[in-house]
Amino acid sequence: MKLITELGYSVSEVAEQLGCSTASVHRWQAAATPPDPKVSLRMELGEDENKRLRKEPARVKMELDILKKATAYFSSSECKVQSAKCFIAGTPAKQHFDPVGILF
Image 1 (tube, helix red, strand yellow):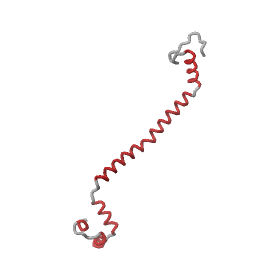
Image 2 (cartoon, one colour):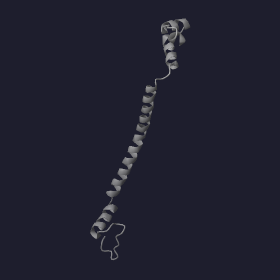
Image 3 (cartoon, helix red, strand yellow):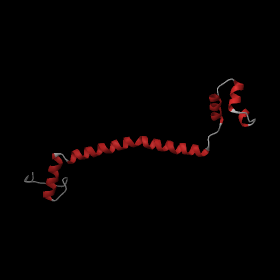
């Protein structure tokens, strides 16, 4: 790489002298060049965003499962009976006590 950076040779000249392709010299040059700090920061931020986005479907699936279970519970006959008892008695279902057994 010193041939290119310090002595001013072109990539094609270096490739010819070494007996390899210009693509190889370009790869070596890219590998030897330190990354730009701004590019590294953008890559790190992109990786953080990718991690967050990979977790998103699992979170959404969990929320959907919870909503499905809640929908099933609140549409069940047991829940409707409890709600009717509470409405008639004017008390929460857990606190309602019907000693005579008149209410359902």
